[in-house]
Image (cartoon, rainbow, N blue to C red; front, top):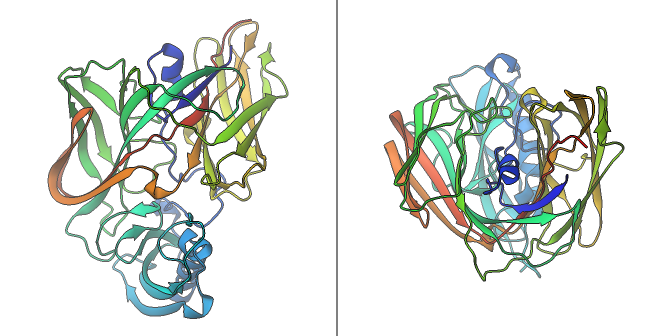
Length: 444
């Protein structure tokens, strides 16, 4: 059976919908083929011994290839190195640049028509072992995260910097193997959309990370199933207190691992939204009587000019019927990353450029091993439209200490850990939807 869901990368209320949302929102991952300039840091053991000149070239290329420089008419003759600072860790430098753009603002999205002008920027790029581990524009815009992060220096912090994102969204269930763009409404969801321990010179983890939600709501779905890709464990079930434990969180983007927490319930609403894309998929085979490979082709067509890029998130898991894993990704050469995550259970294709009414296709190969004489199988697919950062109401905050709290309509979230940290949080309330195809392996 194939089920098409419009999801917010969070869980839904039914058993089938739960499967869609146990994986994280896309962040750059390390494992697998990665393309583009928005790289995640390599593990410490994989660092390269590069010279200052080689590292400076990596940093300058990173600035040139950034969405702000590329999409906002960065002026090549204005790009200049202002300062170089050798950091304590071997093969580590911070490079400070200045440059001008012809369009104001940050990131890939541009207003229509863009107002002309000359807009100066400063960039602080930290290269460690041949990898860009930190990149900040004007002490405000995270070039890796592609969002506002608040004023901070990339060189000196009072404590480990921990990035936390909050997201409010909607999910809609639709039957079928394709989604034609249209108006939808559905289930409300709240989530922590990612916790990242930003790499620094100390290499220290965030110790005994915990997330708590105080709420009077009785949610239809609460994220409580730990897995290698989702290490969080629900230790307290509300209402009123829901609490997750994540243990020690290492620095950097961990391949195929999401430190997230979700809650949601079915809320009938008159609010409507249009995702802004068509999605369809096709397979060379779906029924297996012996181990074999499955080729899936995904086709996405933008139907809204505000959708300039899309993210694809794939997930699968072993059950009593079948053991599938992702093997390879093809056709994603223009994406910023194409990544197969931990154990082949997840895959991400980040920031695929799309043009209005022009189909874009990628192909994914899955190795399928049936556990019954005959099984029909299709993996979970989610596609996220990338809209302007101002599409929803966004709040930012920075604080220091062992914990911080944020309140939304779900209740009050508290993120805490042992020790003192610099917490940078972003909260976005949006009516955007993701399009998710959520089949379930079952015997014909």
